[in-house]
Length: 259
Image 1: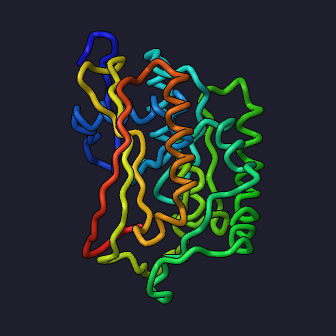
Image 2: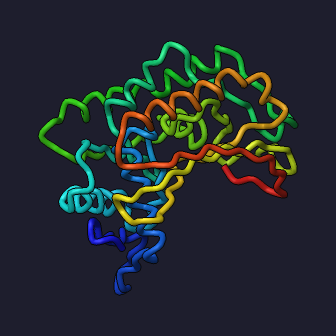
C-alpha cells in the first residue's frame, strides 16, 4: 500500500469463541475506495453485507477511516436486516425529494418479463420511503456525530426498490421480498463505472457503481441512462480523490439473477 494511506480491514463476521476474520488486503483496499466514493459524492450510497458482526462493526470501521484522515464528510449507516447502506444524509435527502422518482421495473416471475410500472406504484414507494426520509433528516441535523446510525423497521423497505433508489440507480427493480424474479436468461445491459484512486494506492481501480437494466427497455430508458452518465461525470469533475473515470456497458444473459 501507498505510504499515504495504509488500509485496515473491516470485520465481516465474528462469533463467540471465533477469531476475528478480516477481509483480504485487496478487498480491504476496494472497501476503503468504495466508502471514499460515497464521501466524495460520486455515489449516494454503498450497500454493505454486514454478516453476524452487524452494522455496529461497520460504524466502527467508518470511524477508524475518519480517524485515519481518509473521510471528511459525515456518514450515516442505515441497517437493513443483514445488510446496511452507507450514505451521506444530505445527498440521500436530495435524491428522495426529487420531483421525478426513478421508474420501477416489475421483474416478478408472475409477470413473465420485465415491465415498467405506472406512477401509482412509484407514489406507493415514495410513501414507504417517508419514514426513512424522517430518519435521514434527523441524521443530517445531528452535526455533532460524524458517523450516525439507524435501523429500518420491518415493512419500511424492500430490498430491491428502496435500496435501488438510495443507491442512485436510474431505474429500480421492484420485487416482493422472497419472490422469484423473471431475469434468468433475460438479456441485461450492465453498466459499470470505475475510476483510479491514487490517494489510497497507486494503480488501484475502484468500482464506483454497477447496475443492470433489461436490454428490451434500454431504448425507453435512454434519457434517464444518459442523465445518469451526465450526473456522474459532473460529480467526478467536482472532486479530487479519483481520476480516470471509465463508464462501460455490456449485455449478459445469466442462468440465474439474485436481487
